[in-house]
Length: 173
Image (cartoon, rainbow, N blue to C red):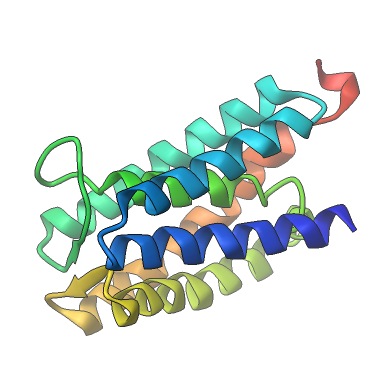
């Protein structure tokens, strides 16, 4: 039941962040992912290990998304720390995604090839959905989707590896 709830919370957080951004409702696009991440950390047995995982994934996402922006392939709506960096709501999505790695996606930790394949498929679909909802725009859709797919092909197994290194169990505190 916990894994299903984690999956549903991620989906609600994703929709809130993307639609909030498309509607220029910063309070929704930022608060929802932050709230869900905080709730996750409050109920996980080892919030320190889980916080480290979230920070690693957020940094990886910041690098990947900012590279897409700087390559001129995508433009995200929303506020950012500085031009060329991904916006804050995307940081929230990467942090929120990290909360699934030891929960609803934990079954993929020993299936790295499948994780890579699923990342290569669903990463681009997620970005395309965000564009369709108005939270971003492609300047080169084909190349952008290919590079997002490659990024997620590599990032998904890496993030699951990090999650497996520091599982949020009582014994790891």
